[in-house]
Length: 228
Image 1: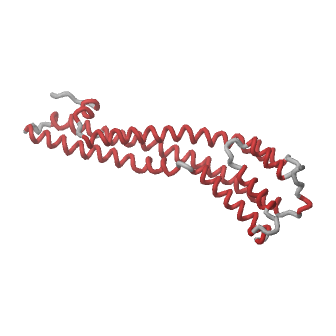
Image 2: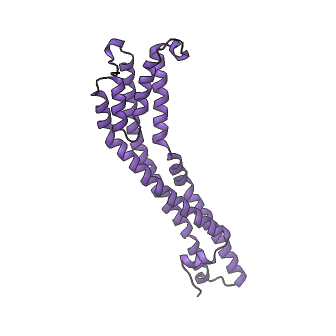
Image 3: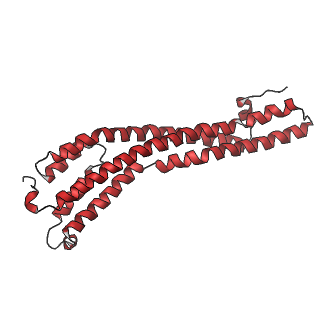
């Protein structure tokens, strides 16, 4: 009976087998690296959010609140919204095209764009995890099918059709399907866990944007300006 095993299968495989194996390895490394980096970013953002928002609302003016938020919000998740609210107020300069838009609509427009930018920043890379989680099993299955094809062709050329001669080579090829699942399962779990964190931060951002809109649309006398 010849040598069998995963190492033997990879060593005797052709270019397609090696390409599938390297592709799965690259997908696994990419998903784990992204999981660690994105998980750390979302963890920091979640921890900083209450302190950053509290620092903003405790400031004596909107301008100083934006400055305090810039220091407390290291991941710049909430800061763009406060900057947009401040910009919407400061756009009341005559002669500026944006000043011709109604004040409330102008503030809403700026907050909407800032909210979209913050959400895109939070959702960055989620497509990568979803793609890896959905395609890795099929890539592994491709390696298995290709390996079985070559294993059966090799067995047919030798003329040995016993169960011992078939089980070893065919069993080796099934490892590619297992590799595909090993790559896909962590990616799917990471997508769901990180997606939940993104949704929670998105809800916080939406609430913060609503509060900023109410603040920016309040009478001018109720909004203290930053001291010169």
